[in-house]
Length: 422
Image (cartoon, rainbow, N blue to C red; front, side, top):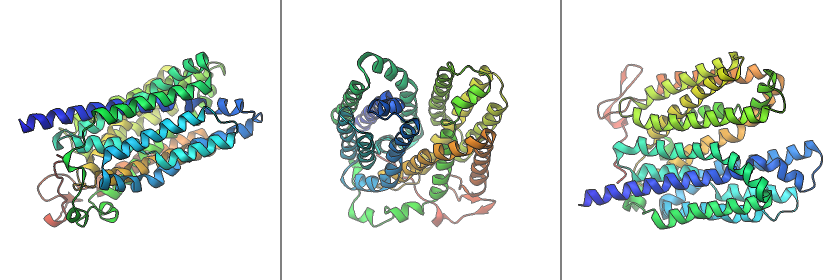
C-alpha cells in the first residue's frame, strides 16, 4: 500500500510539474517575442534605440537568473522546493501585471531585472521532477518536463500574436499574468512535497554544499556540456530570418518561414527530450550525449548546405532532435550523482549554465553573423565536436562496478552513490 501511494504521488507530482512548466513557458512566449513592438508603442521612435532597449530587457533576465539560480537552489534544499516554485511563479504574476502599466522603456528593463532576481523556476521544476520520480524513472521524468518547456514556446508566439491583435499588447500582459496564476494554482493545490525535501544537518555536512556538488563525478564536465549544447541551440535566433532571406525568400514571407522553422526545432527538441528519457533505459548517458551532439553537429552542416526550405526544415528538425537527446542525457547524468538534500542546488547550477548560454549565445552569434553567417554554423559544429570529444575522454561510466576512464580502472571510493529520491 505504501508503495502504491508513493507511486500515485509521484505521477501526480510529475503531471503537475509538466503542466505547470508547459503553462508557464507558454505564458512567457505570449508576449516576449513582441517586446520590440511594445517598446515602440511607449514612444521610442528610433530603430536603434528600440533594438537597444529590447536587447537589454530580453538579456537581463536570463543573465541575473543564471547568477542566482544556485543560490535559490540552495535555499530550496533548505526550506523546500515547493515554496521556492510558488515564490518564482508568484513573481511572474506580479511582474507581468505591472508590465501592462509601464510608460517608459526603462521601466520595462527594471521589471525584467526584477524578474531575473526572482525567476529560475524552469530548473527548479526539473529538479522537483527528478526528486519526485523513483530513480529508474528519473530520465523519463526529466524528459517530460523538458518537453513541456519546449512545446510551450513553440505555440506561445502564435497564440500571443492572435491575442495581441484581439486585445492589444498591454492587455496581453494581463492575460499572461493570468496564465502564470493558473500555473501557480496548480503547484499550490496538486504538488505534494516528497518527504526527502529537507536534508538533515548531518547530510548538509556530508557532501551537499556547493563546492561538494561541483566536485561530484562528471558534474563540472556536464555543466560545460549543457552550456555548449544550449549555446549552439540558441545561436540561430539572431540570424535565421536573415539567412532565410539570403536564400531567396521574399522579405515579406521571411517572418512566417522563420517562425515555422523555429517551431520545427522546438517540436523536434521536445521529441528528443521525451525519446531521450526512454533511450536512457538502454544506453548510457555518455553514449546518448555523444549521439545527440553528433546528430546536432551533422544537422548544422546540412542546414548550412541546404538551398531550399524543405531541406532547411529537415536539417533544423534533426538539429532539434539531437539537442533534445543530449540535454536530457546531460541533466539525467548529473541528477543521478547528486546526494539526497541537494537536488535543487545541483539543478540550480545546471540551469545556470543553460541560462548563461541563453544570455551569451544570441549576442555573440549576432556579432559573428554580422560578418559571416557560415562562421556561426562553423562554431556550432566545433562546439558539438568538442562536446563529443569531452564526454568520450573524461566522462565516467555509470554502474555499481568500478568505473573506467580512458581504460583506467577507478577505485570504488571515487564512485558516487545515487540514492533513490524517494
